[in-house]
Image (cartoon, rainbow, N blue to C red; front, side):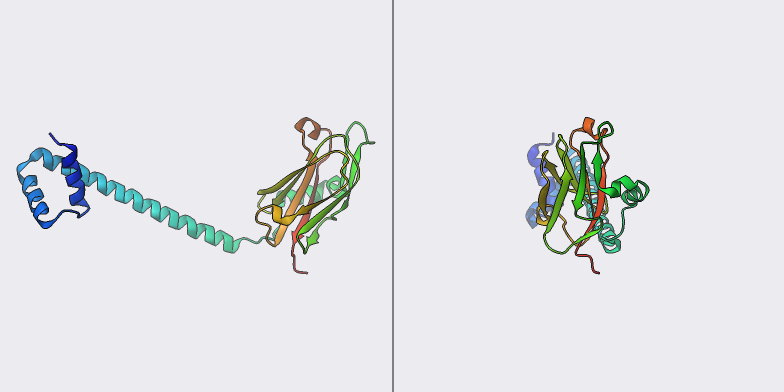
Length: 204
């Protein structure tokens, strides 16, 4: 019967940790003990499989890094995100900067600033609103890969606030989008969405 100590000895042999005397005794036992030899073959096969799996993992990680590097090299941070650009182009209400109630036009907000395609050259993006809603608004900032980078709640009555670009990750030069809508999902159906483009350190 193979003991835990026998298994440990087999592992030591496979990893080259036995002394010359221990290795000689190990090989002699392989010739004379069929059960020990069978366990050795099993452990050897298992080690081979593990090595192949580890090698495959290393290869896959390397390929993933190469792929990510290529995408990063090919990626243009100022390229437009088609879905948002089409929405802005097709629905002029989005460019008007007005969030209006479908049932009551008295409740509306107009975006005074930032203007569409505003280029931020410092660390601050300032919002100025005209009018107010009686619901919380959600401001979301995404990059041109539609990755959400920042979200902030705007309480009713707030007409001016600043966004520090250092507060959201990946605030590198490039094309970004901000979207403003009611925070409550039920309220979102009553109001139009505002979506605009802004740039960070765009070269003129």
